[in-house]
Image 1 (cartoon, rainbow, N blue to C red):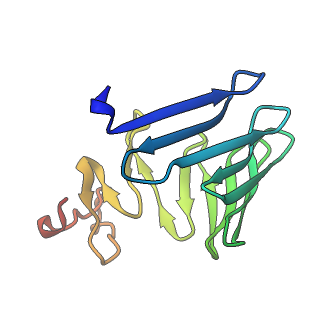
Image 2: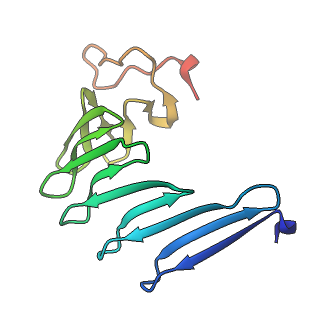
Image 3: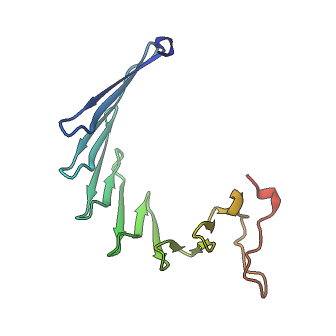
Length: 156
């Protein structure tokens, strides 16, 4: 396979979950990722070449805390139906509210819009058709329910 440029070796634990994978090449030291799991089968720890991240879950198996190799702790909170309501990731806090369809309605001050079929039309980065939203916050046109389109110079 691949003219022996690289080799992948995987190992599974007793629960048939991936416990490690190692990539080796002729030119580099092996790259190894190892996993430890909770009793519920969630990843409790990931060791990537000696850089360890750990993860803590709530009673519903939702991620509550992750501690990264540099000591950074990211935290997450959820509502009674499992929607993420708050997070702190890399020091940045975010809050989320949801509509009746359990879709994100707002993240911090950014409103998310959806079409009648539930497809996301706009978030903080893109309008529908994957056009990048202009640096200026889009506003509603006077008397129109449609969002003002981002300028075509911001297309991706």
